[in-house]
Length: 437
Image 1 (cartoon, rainbow, N blue to C red):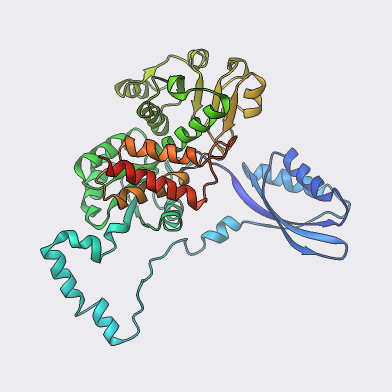
Image 2 (cartoon, rainbow, N blue to C red):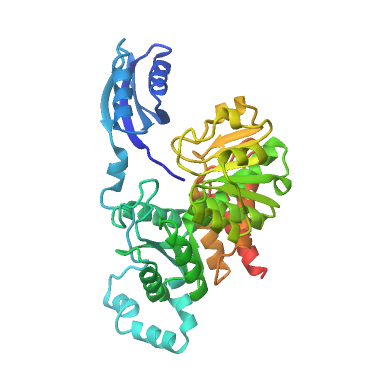
């Protein structure tokens, strides 16, 4: 989902008097900051030193938070403000390392020349043996042209490299997959398709990442058609999988039958259209959508969805409303109907705050802070690779969404994204769905 916040760690000293930490937290909250981790660094004879991680929307809000803390007085002191995000990225987040030690000439001969020639000859005669004797069977290319990086837009593929490294790190940690970033210096669909086809022999899957709309649709469709390995555009289908999982959980909490409900999608970009398709694949009988773009509305109709003329039309008729526009405050409190489920998923500011939607009568409301694609893509590809599947289809994606929902505690929207059990469940569900074909 779209994210546009900055993260800083504040080292704050408070006198050992009850309520001082609460004063600091209140000052941060009043200025609109979001507190993450609170770590006690040192407990002195009459003071406590803590590192408090704070999220702010921009530099101006961060400065307001700092000034509010400094104005507290009473011995409360702000010592340092650290940008730990930048520090964590120094030198990059991934590396390629050998799995085997090469300490002797005998070991050199086995892993390189002359011994490697025998392996090459074997693969020449039996190409399928590459899946046994190389890393190809466990490697996924993470391909971007840099045209839709997070919520930052078209900033170029090199500027998007930290995102691709993050995907690779998550692939490794959560699914044991080698994710290899591939940065493209073109956004021409034909060139992208041709390039990916040329590099595809070195991989068992292609994850398209942060490729803008509408050219992302054609690129994914063509690559799925022309390659015999799984291809998935994460901004479309990864988002759609986690959104479907969230809707399943929300409907359980609200007492709604999702398949019998009328679902409305506000915003029909790459994620919005994919969400509509995912809900239809799940079995929802009535899926509607609205967007300012006529092309987007036509695309929804081509996939079997029902275009609606306005947000008000959608709010008046739909039981479940999902929004991925990136426009804060787009949904008005007076437009919410009693009993609706509202998932306003744009970050950091949703289309309507959950509290407002609930006050207006919504049966369930949530924003997109917990709806993270990381819940989907590692397990989806792990399951597809385990099954040696040549594609990732909607049946496999629905299985992934149902697995995520099954791991969600009652009252929560989705599980904790780093829970290894969730990723194992997604992988197993996708593998079963692929094997059942």
